[in-house]
Image (cartoon, rainbow, N blue to C red; front, side, top):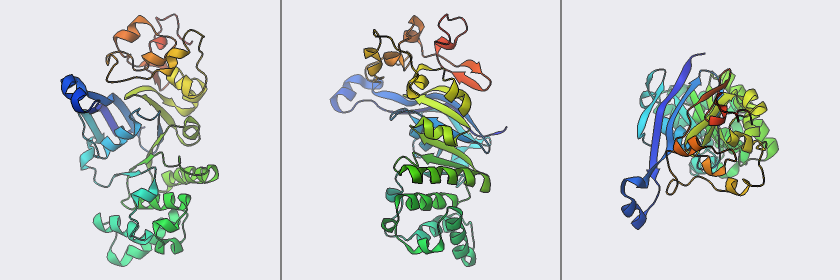
Length: 320
């Protein structure tokens, strides 16, 4: 299957410290929030980017949309720079209330991108807005309402409709269901599945919840403090997680009494060796090479790769 969106050796850097400590640290003040990530997103698939807060999953999506600058690498859409793909990439944010203008009705919110991107003539504008509302499960009566007059699920549907107004090829959904009730959450996930087919969309779905990703996504990419640590088909990652962090997220990590305390300590870019494995402080399987260099990817199944030395066939601990 052809890759529509490609992340090649992508790096996004931020400041790790501030004030006096930053001046004393000098160049080491910077750390990579997204650290040399390679990821191909195939046309028509739904890929889940999964990880805890601070893993870089939202940052890498913002980089694709040009909302944060790249410190290295490239992001391309069909081989051309993502910066040239105007309107082809859109994002649905976690909090739709804060992303919609409170002074605009839903109709006005949808009409604005249609006008800006020339997606419809003035005579067809009302009909196009009504179609967008219908496609996301909202009747035309919702078009005259303001954001504060909508429920959480209705707000998210309106936000999705606005993102669809530019007829994007790739839709990013950043924790798009995390603030919704469980019953409404399932409705929005099913809506995204249907819109993928209706609009011929490719969807990148950002979440901290592997169970949500299992329901929605074709593949899962797991990130930890800027590093991509495991990537594979959803059924494979879920049934046979190979990275200890993936196992931790799914509650399958085996720990012994001597290593439980160490797993509570997360990576600190201002303190820890940045060349070492990012998961070093939490992993019960640490080896010498983990302290020296963050591992590259090992093939752990068809289309399934894992950045962990335990997955090196030469290691006796493989499969633990």
